[in-house]
Image (cartoon, rainbow, N blue to C red):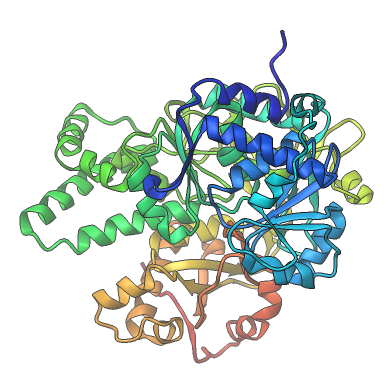
Length: 599
């Protein structure tokens, strides 16, 4: 008998494994759902949606924070045969108008705070369901459940869903223009989940947090679909500021994050060690991190750890590092991931030294999320692992990486020309990435094809590589945009990290932790200059940052400058800060423009 290849079928199988086990919970467990209660709610929600006329091929949109109630609502929609998808909570009414028009949904499930914006978008909605507080003209979840008819054939409805049906739409956050709606089939999703788990094992009861927006394909795969396929336990994190508390509460067995989250965890460890006031404990922490640093350095250099260092690390682990991992909540991990953007090698090395090896992954929404990975024991520094089994790849003449196989999207919704531009007649998807492959099939991401810098001398450079190298040497930097296309030399727009800035200001007795005050502070400028100089020392001469400007603002994820996964929107940045950029190329050093000096 073949394996089930739709989300309703695999959910029903997972829910039957241990109905009394906790499936979804809040931080601390004050709110939770057993698989038994979860399945019962799914049945009632599917009946309610069916009574509204929602069925196979229809679309249902979700707009809410990460919360327990999302799961039975989303999975209930799947059981009607509908295509269920989430939108980013930061979208404006104008952006919602585009997405909802493209998706064709007439039902939205949301929090009360978004009702006015949804109504203002101009796309008429048949039904808006509010998950938290009542709003006139909307349905509550309880009312939705009450709509279900007694003669609704739940089992026949979900069993009619086929592997060729569209399970979700993923609207790429995009760095320019309107987002494209990626259509993912149940068959592609089934391949993704099973191929991924064949490399990075996932089992019933594995614990993970859901903290990325549910509109992001990474959260949908790791926090929803792997959950349905294998029965993982989800702890929802409604606000990213609660992530530290969530990790300490959950002690996840499987976990992944974007590079900036890993970088912030690294900074938090370093700040806590620096702030330790008990002399014996401070000395022990410094010793353990020094040992961890030597192990990290060996890892980064690709050299084996000698017996003496291995023994010293084991002592440091028993005395300090094990407790430090437990304090972070990362002491029970089977595997850890970093994806969505390149991560500085120094960050990977730091966590390797702590005893937390991280596997880098590469993927994209058009390929149902994760495409390549290697388990921690087989991971190679600087690579994103190997293609999942069952996929093919080739490199085009211009270096662009092409992929073919079951993960490839159906199409961009209602965008035949854009689909044709990305997907050829033979099924090869043009990824837009420049990726190299070694003799063993390990992939190394160079950069986005369209983002490579070509300076006025014709030299090609990867801005992502430059930015990661600099950021690794300067923890205060939240975002860095390298400028240099068709220019004589590279410069950088610097934005301070909103979370690191206040503790830095307190440590250095700076009275005002605002972005504007810190951007003008001589201590901060000197610290950034030092970090850039240190980063420059690891770059070729042509890649180095010659001048920089610290902008008097923090960039918010989902704003004009960066996406929700911290990807730079390079074209909008270049347009918005054109005057600041031009000032960095004036012969005489202008006010607010700085040079890094020497490392």
